[in-house]
Image 1: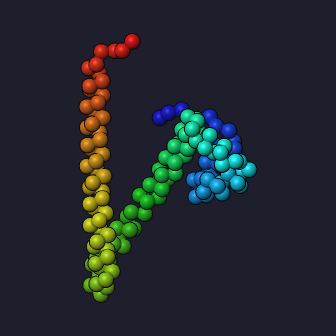
Image 2 (image 1 turned 90 degrees about the vertical axis):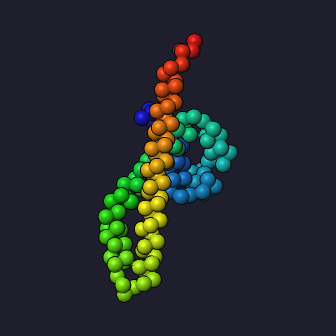
Image 3 (image 1 turned 30 degrees about the horizontal axis):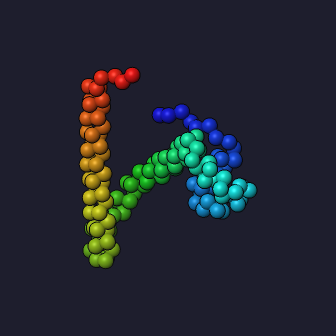
Amino acid sequence: MRQKATITAKQRRLIEALLAGQSVTAATRQLGINRATFYRWAKQDAFKAALADAEAELLANAMRRLLSMQSGALDALSDLVSDRRLPGARLAAAKTVLDAVLRFRNAVELEARLAELERKVEAAQAEMPPSD
């Protein structure tokens, strides 16, 4: 994991506002920052890294929430798929399950392929002579 980027408090508040869903215009206006300042900051490595770190943390939190709901969601889908009294809901649930299975399978396959490519790149780099 990389070291946390050092940014100003105002930059941190801007990132928080953006991740809360505010537009650049609204976030900069709220903080009393010119839009041009945001675009200047957006070119700075420390700001880019801090924004990327904050986005990754937000996504990780969302993934944890989704994972915590999966058991209940699967139970609900299972109940709907089995309920012959609600054919429309049953069809929708079946489509949802099949779609989720296919997306999950694709994600797992892509992850495996990416890991294999990374392994090959590392092996090729290890065989290269050191550069001066």
